[in-house]
Length: 64
Image (cartoon, rainbow, N blue to C red; front, side, top):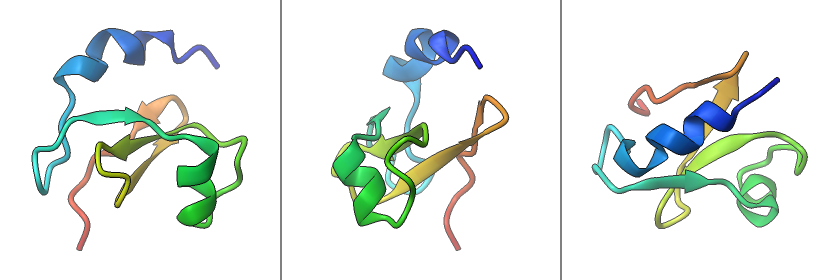
């Protein structure tokens, strides 16, 4: 699945809770949050929250 479109929007994307910028999750971020290291996800700038990508769409819903 081509996720290149996310790179165009990533500078504008923010965490819905803290409004911190988002970035691509690293393998360390994924592992820390219990996800497989080959998964694609976005991460809050401080690395404390992960936003999975489901069927090519980042899930940016606030955490409850």
